Length: 212
Image (cartoon, rainbow, N blue to C red; front, side, top):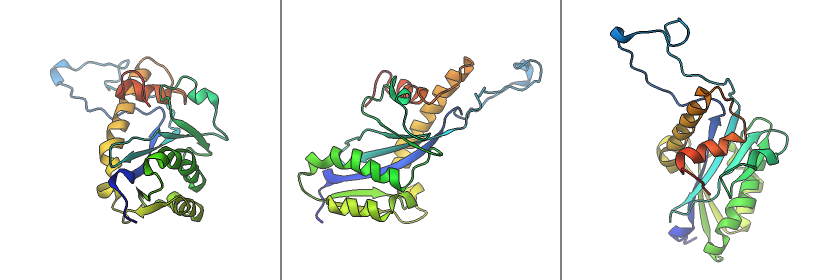
């Protein structure tokens, strides 16, 4: 296929629990022990109890190009309320019954995000898209669409994505930690986290102001 490096990209997805903060390690000295939660003698990190899943699909090119995120939330259809206060200016929002990605949504991501965003740069040349072998990536319709648009799909070896998937280590772990810290700050003020808070929380802790 003779794919140039600027036409190579890696895509992956990560699940976030809406109201769950990042894990904290707490050191307590015996000499300074005191009750901090009404007398039980246990120090706790508050949570709002919302464990609803949100999936984020991210794609980064070998030349450093970052595509807009594709955010999947639980619902029958996307709601304008999810995005109206979003600082993620170019993000795309989608819905699924459980907040997970599936074959139909991955195909939608290919059609609405990856292909149009990389078309001009490719200029008719072949593109290469690297992903793990999750079943949502491997549908006939997705592979056919890719080949029809001169996109060669490269699957990582099974059960190796923890080592071979670049986005797992370089992108999603820091992103999950940043979001967890944002949830921690929000819930300390006894504020419940809603779907529309997700983009704001991520942006506040990663970008400071606004992000693409």
